[in-house]
Length: 343
Image 1 (cartoon, helix red, strand yellow):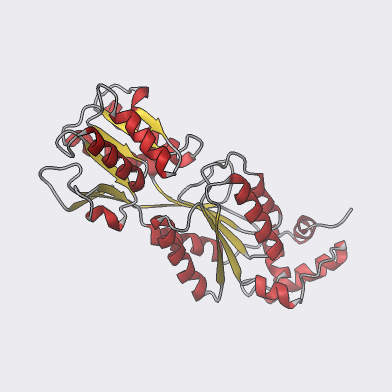
Image 2 (cartoon, helix red, strand yellow; image 1 turned 135 degrees about the vertical axis):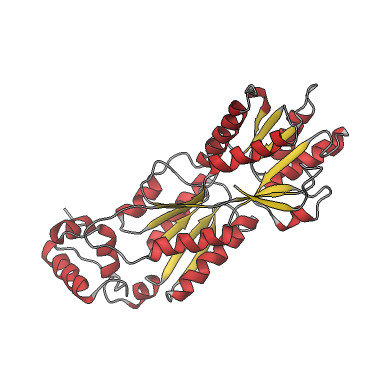
């Protein structure tokens, strides 16, 4: 049987990721540890061309980044944050987009493994239901960090906001401006981030003694046609909601379009809260209240976790929860405009 990285790790009592980095001559691994790993690799019969080849010396300076869509504002900002930290460490990033496809995401992971990247930072595709490809990264000793859209099934570093609390605060704000029939326009059911926000939505209703109505939750994919259809389903009902929390600003804009079609006035008859606080929100009429996520900081913290000094004897995983901010604009409020409140 061919020796593996795990065999080397077990022999000298270090992590698989440390072995992988040592064999790639990663500068974050001490010379002593590198020598121990090389000696153990030889003793267990681990044969690999990765040692001392120029190709893999170059690949050891690469970080893979997989996002659903590069043109999403949140991911564009997060990528900038990742790159800023990578540059400080003499690293470069390879940015890939899954296009919300689980199959494409799996192929991208395989490709990044083949390239020999030193780590991977991922925000899940909306279609992803199984996670064995991420276990494959760990098996190959490649560090992994999830950000924004995370996965509870994989033990690794994660960076996100408190989505439960953010949704809770968004609904509480709708209640504070007089909304009594509040809907949630969400993304695909499979996403953990979506489930967390629904729980926050439900808890806010419960604490204000507002009955939960399953018919006031509408799910959609992330394409324009799907989100507009989901928004219409809510607003074309005979007794439409007077408040809506949307999964994203793009979904909130679909709500605004459907409301205009129906002749529903915002915020007089309908108040809307989105997520992401995109620059366009200020330019809409009315301007859009939104929950700001610190996307650039998400990228920075993700890269920092990935590139932090490795521990030789024990791996531990950290989940960084970043602060979000409710930015109140005209789509919800008649009184307190253009003020910010911390979530």
